Length: 148
Image (cartoon, rainbow, N blue to C red; front, top):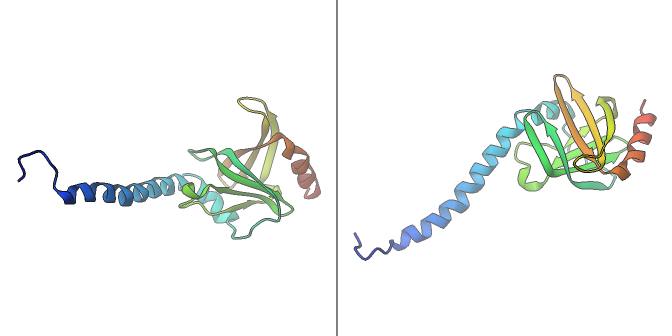
């Protein structure tokens, strides 16, 4: 035992090493568990590996089950439906979704806390909502009408 108060060299090495191994594992576990509260219910029906031929709206917000996805969703509107996926660091347990227009229940304009289009979707007993920027309204209306 050292009496001068200095930590042994291996403790100085193991603490940061442990952090860089344990923290990402813990983070991934928490994100995965959050996905089980709602996202996975949508993934059973709407998971996809397809990439849309559309431009993405980044850092959008949404709610699925008890999971709040504030500023971490990437969303794209295409002729196939609406694609959703979280940012990379929030992706464990979250498959990319392709929500068909037939699953969209409604959408409306919002102004609080930010202007946008709030979209509501349903899959069996699960529901979700997410926001698109105001400039996406015309594209969303056109796509929904063409699939009605």
